[in-house]
Image (tube, rainbow, N blue to C red; front, side, top):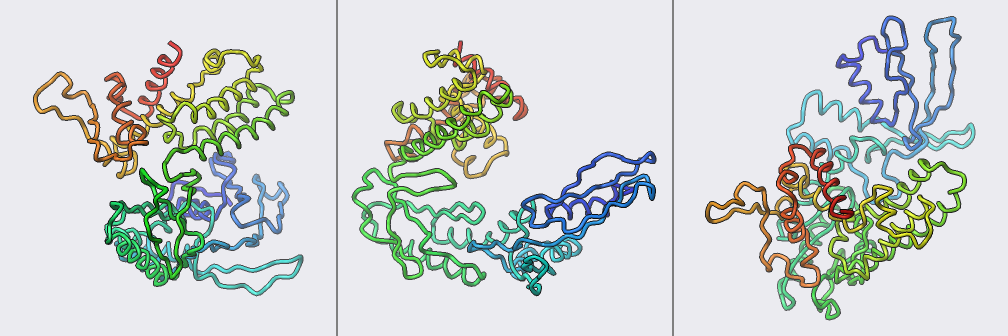
Length: 447
């Protein structure tokens, strides 16, 4: 197929529809002397669609290769195996309630409805089964639709005075209360019952067996004297839970998380070391960054202020990665290795991440809940520090857990931010801020 007017509304709508179905174009420029574009449409491996038949017509018929495809749906368009399957009727009603209507709502309705799935074995196919729930996996639009579907759940939770974070199908509740509170069990159990009721009303299923509870306090060994109840099932307290891939323990020491990251990174380094003789240095660097450095950088803002005993495990991983990449002797100093590779040492990498998040939060590029943790410094009288874009340190009551106070974002972010030169704090764009910040941290690390 070729589109003579690629910038027309119909052409743009067609390309968006192809993208949401997991399809992508290979040729993006004109392939005809008249300026026409032939769009060869391929399918993504995870799009749930595969090419069943392919016919290429002779070039003598046209100055373009014409390709006809017959596509067979081979994967479930619903969230198979998971507890989340959005009801299309409820979702469309929710979109309408948010003010969406007309052509936009009709387009979304056509995107959701009219789909079916079947099972194919050899030349035999089952009867098509209509899909009344779920969204196509792999499309950009699907996560946004799911967030809209789940939006009322946050309002239900907050009505009990309980805070929450929703990330895709992962919902986390936060409730703070004094040790001897008599109201806490009642409030939390009522909130959990309301969550269960909302799930049932919206045709969702919540599995109590996969729900975990973590108590964070100065004295976690004492417990809370009671257990939250979800759908008649008592939820036991866990020593550690996994939150978006990060292991959290009851004292927030991150010991388990650091040990897990270091163990997996060393396992990957062992494999990379075997490939070293067969790869060029640029390719080896790419593999190291993909398999090792990415693990160190994931959520590394949490590693700021960790005790040296804990952080040393990650420092050894970074040093080992540098040795593999440079081929240097084991006794070579880490500072020289990192400087040669232009790597920031671990402690400065974590500071870089915190400061970038701080810049985003202050400039409307980050989540609101992080911006609310930051307070601009406002002196009571006119001082030279006025207009310096400084941040205030929070009172001790805002970060009461003594063991983690100096690592809390509301404490460490202002402290690091205020130490920056004024011209970096007032950088006009995120790109300019990142570039200036990395240069400054590199100077701090290596002189």
